[in-house]
Image: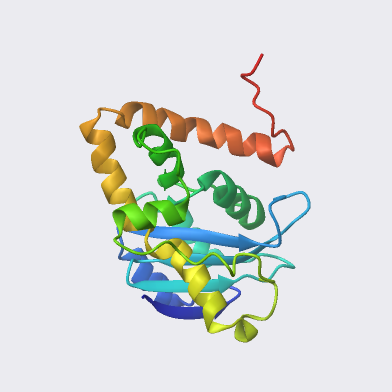
Length: 210
């Protein structure tokens, strides 16, 4: 269980300095709902070193988070997401930024774990981290409540969504390397940037289909 640190609006300078010393970070977001960005807004941002998790509740009136943007745009730090299509969409749209050096564990899992049809975060945590499946009961929470009023269970749920990502990423990376799938994975990540732009335009259909 990681230490949890809470921030309103943005990271402070001490937290920023600590995170900038990391080479890899786990990231996740919570939102009002799944229709990002046209109907629902981003509510929380979680950033984890693997031992510490920083939970930030941005100001939803302006989303001014210059310190978080410094992390997202730092190409020397890899940002690991589970479903990057959703999280990067939210972060890039609301924070008006472009994320550099990202890794998506869901895409990697689907590419290299052909022995399984289960690619959820809780399944990957169970397989790669030796943990029981994550408790997802608090996923449907009102994340727009004041950060100070969220329960310990809600905060732990939010923290867990970023806590295990680095460990999962490392094992998936080694699997892709072994199976010689790193090149096609990198192509998929390049294509993800276009997929996110289409989502932001409201185009969710697969344009490659007949």
